[in-house]
Image (cartoon, rainbow, N blue to C red):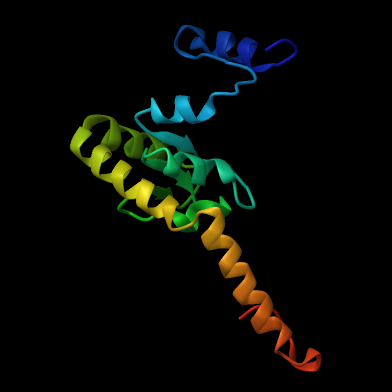
Length: 146
């Protein structure tokens, strides 16, 4: 990862021997499927398609409420942190999932089901229904999607 500041940061933090920076990859789906869990406690993301990709790969997701896709993450398929800045809560979530393989496996199976319910065809149909509903609403009374 030439030009990235993160390898040097990992070195300064003393974790360089435990962190890998893979750079651009064209096998992300394979990497996700090989993972035990996916962690994305971003401070802010409007949707973060990567959360849906992780769910589709069948891995439990740990994310924060500030991630738009957090609405997809149910307690059956992952954990949503109320505050992305709460390192102790993140550590507890990770410890729970790392130490409980049966829970991870159940969440992974459910994660896949959640993702399948939000595939391209399902989302296109939902948007189509929304547009139809909006088209039937007189312009003067429109106040956003309902």
